[in-house]
Image 1: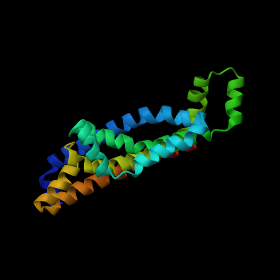
Image 2: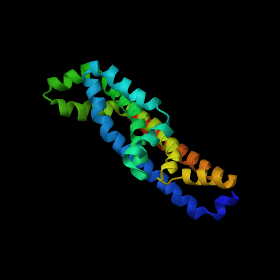
Image 3: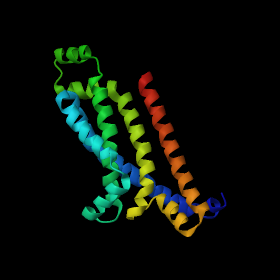
Image 4: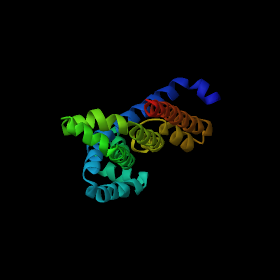
Length: 204
């Protein structure tokens, strides 16, 4: 608490960087995962190879993936974002595909019989019904991203990991613990917010 009270501005700055890394990674991950998830739901034969590939990426140790990406992209923000977006794919694609596939086929066929196009069925019928499961996937992905983003400081991306690594290097454990605690608080806050959104959709 002593370190936090005397370095509140620094902690807030690193927390803001951590949040920016998280949001950028999530935005890119969703931009990729939504169409891939829809594809997997529409063409079940693609499920095994797509999820198998994404599962392989997900099992690669974060430090190893970052090391490879540094060789390609160099150090910095976008290297971390690329790695985090890649890690989120398995969770997001699986939940998006499961959410869409889980919609009652009778409801879908009734919508098509009413003259809706495939896009209208997806947006007006499948999307809202699949949303609770999609949000659950986003929640898990966000918490994972926040946790792994702590390692992003290793490639010069900033964030709360900067405090953790610097504290360990300097033997300043109050600094390291403050960085870790701030990351935990950020993850818990994101989890609570998305749980509330998930419950809201399930009740609607």
